[in-house]
Length: 424
Length: 105
Image 1 (cartoon, rainbow over the protein chains, first blue to last red):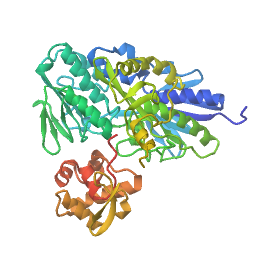
Image 2: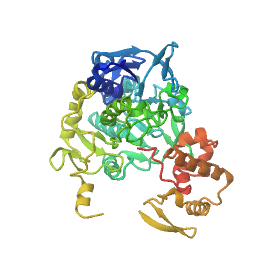
Image 3: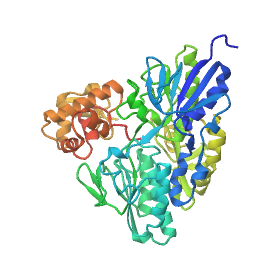
Image 4: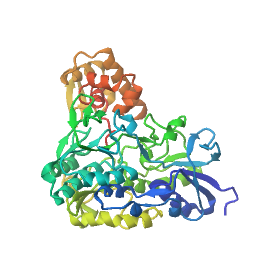
């Protein structure tokens, strides 16, 4: 075995990306590498579960586990706050001023919520009439507020893109509609979805389908609304172009940015704190020995767990190639898929990549499914629920989910059929 | 993808009227797109934003988001909306001859 010292791989962040990359690297390269994962806490949150918490459909105890416990033996876990990365010195400087040297650095610190970026958002009404479900504390606090809400204006607002899981705000609207109907108070509540986009979603065909569902459920939609400030006491959202949307209960998705240390690390991030990376190799633009996985990067696909999972394979291969002195492979194609809960025990599923937008069809097997793309079904909902154990036991452990490829396969979808049908 | 005539030259545009090749752009084209979108004339402040958008796109391969513009273009967000009503990032990109910002995915 190797006569050279173990190569030092440091992974910042012990969430979805950091954990699955650490475990894959450990399994692939064994003692040829030393792997250190650094995170500031030991609470790994299954983030898709946050959507369900306000509706009493998930409990914190079910969706939070120890970060350390998800890492295979032989991987070092350090609880520490990162102060900054010093790229030229190949050092991570911790808040207590200790240095951690690396040969390869993997950035996996995700996106952070920045309510302070919006004037008036995190004022006195935060936690009272203004809530978010994008954090564990927020989702917990929203539950009683929603349960006691029986009449008035419920506004669900995306302050600004990009956000994690761009479909979650829509799912929240659908689940709120369902819960209010079950409680018999739906007619007394007006639900409005307020988005900076010009449609329900970022991609045209999916937008049309989702827009149809929104209409069917009696949810109002305010598009191209770029939130400028929030008048908490007056309970109004105000756009930069001086439109206003009044609310009694605001569920906001605050602006996102990268982790704070990115901004303190010269040359690492962009002005929002995301780390520019090659969209296909996931190598950072800053340095060849720095790779970026998941929400932390600026690559143009959804900030979603599925993306992080599919990126894992590419990162692990490219870390190995880098250590061998070889060029990285451009194998990541932007593949993303997301279940969209639509209430009433149903969900739909979308699957797309950098080039091909979500289309109707079947997944993962063309024509056979069993899951339907862009169509509501009970099976999709059950699949979404079934995913959580797979997350902990398969995905984080660094295994592939059976039947689910990292790469996007357009076969069996509407677009592909049109193409095969002879359209250029 | 279709072609259209702008300022006396033929350029390629997408379904929403964004130029697909930034190299086909020039200042006369910018003025014509601006005018078609209700912005006339283009002032120095407009140009500051348009040039910033183009430079950022040509350097990084993606257009800046509105928050990013507000932080780094030297023009505050409030004014961006006054200069380019409704969607400053989108409209400035269109006038600047670069693809629609993909910040929204």
